[in-house]
Image (cartoon, rainbow, N blue to C red):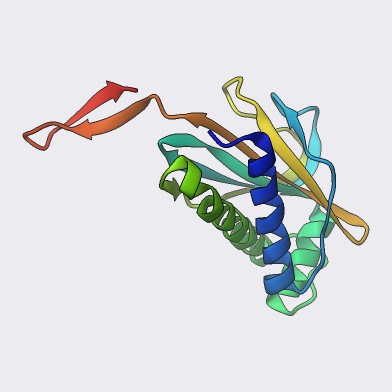
Length: 174
């Protein structure tokens, strides 16, 4: 597995690149940290993307409604003051670009990875967490007065489907 520093660097570079090239915005990276589960309730938008291959896990982007509107305004060249379908679609696409950039960067160390379709959740006073006890790497960013967090949780895939000599799928442990 890659070390935490390399994973953090990949998240930082992918996020800065997407914000710079796709949105024309500059983000400032805060100090990365790890957490086992989400702490407390939050308000805003979370985009979640699954990762699968020899390593499996989840990546997510969390931002406030105001940050979601700022991102959407820059991406779609319009003015967004409240969350609607266009804002949620824009956040899903930005998360997909960031996680896609991260995936491309780490694949040379972790092997090929597939990405799920982004799921976007918006609301007030909610919490999201994974069912396992795996550790998440969290990289916070600021853009003007707004913030966002990009998070990733990866673990080795111990049960990969394998084809037997007849082409049937069988489960094996690694």
